[in-house]
Image: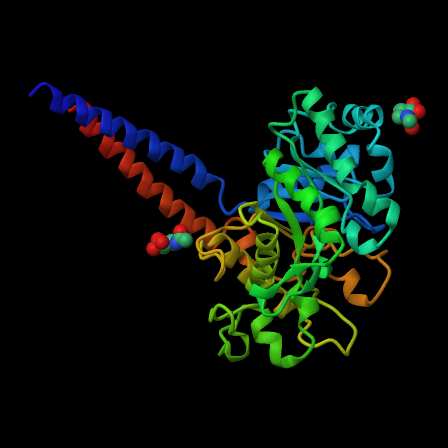
Length: 382
Ligand SMILES: *[C@@H]1O[C@H](CO)[C@@H](O)[C@H](O)[C@H]1NC(C)=O
Ligand SMILES: *[C@@H]1O[C@H](CO)[C@@H](O)[C@H](O)[C@H]1NC(C)=O
């Protein structure tokens, strides 16, 4: 008889701990990421940006395309997770361990632990450059930088990866038939996947339904709007695709599976939708950009997963934080931003802002958990 109250209090104490942990988790909110590109001459000071993101938005992660020290310092003590990048032109140098160690000493060590650095990306879309030197030194550079992190005992907290465009797939339709491009598959991607798996690091991709949406007939599909999904049944699997992002992610998954690495985590390093474009492009305006980004966040964080990856959530970085007025190319390239330089939204994406429905829902959740905690305290000590 003496056992029962003991077991009950252990159970209640466990419940209490779980509830407290859930409360802490809940306070972190949605945890979406954003790409903080800086190819512009009108951007606000990094300190202002860091304060704005941490106080006024639900954004919890930023990715930089370099290792700008002012930005790294600005995110100190904000709790925001930061990813930095070794620019493509430094990849060959990073294969030299002395150089890699100096890189870590200069670009990482001065900023941690105040700045929560979680990843270093070696280049961006390197395979798409088709530059022989960069392609051949990419995996050795990732390995060498990892060795430098191990030597500094930083490899548990900081992971190495590199983002890919979907151009690395030779075929992506239907999703189940996707493969990596021949040549790259065994010579670069496979050794890279071996490395990522051993280091417990993710495979990172930049899927853009926007660039896959070339006519108005695919607009609903690209924007996660309800649609019949008739032309998107995968004949091999009989799975039905209701949005283009799922099809793109499942193509990546299928290609990984061909090489035997389907268990490596997939991170969405970039995705987004511009608010302004040249007249020929379909479905570009602030409303569709808002729809894409809002639906994207709900989808990747929902736990629905994709047809081939049910129940998964995807760490996702929206492109981009600001419009970048100095980017070359078509006008859409300069108009992917969520915010103007004065931090007002370019269009409304409620789920990104604090003090809105998402936060209200979050506070209901907290009230519920607080009641659970109080009840379990009563049960434990009565
Ligand atoms: C490796 O990097 C160090 C530091 O930058 C440099 O002094 C050295 O010459 C490099 N070694 C080679 C073989 O390039
Ligand atoms: C996904 O979640 C559902 C509902 O919780 C469950 O029935 C199903 O087995 C899960 N599937 C996988 C692959 O985990």
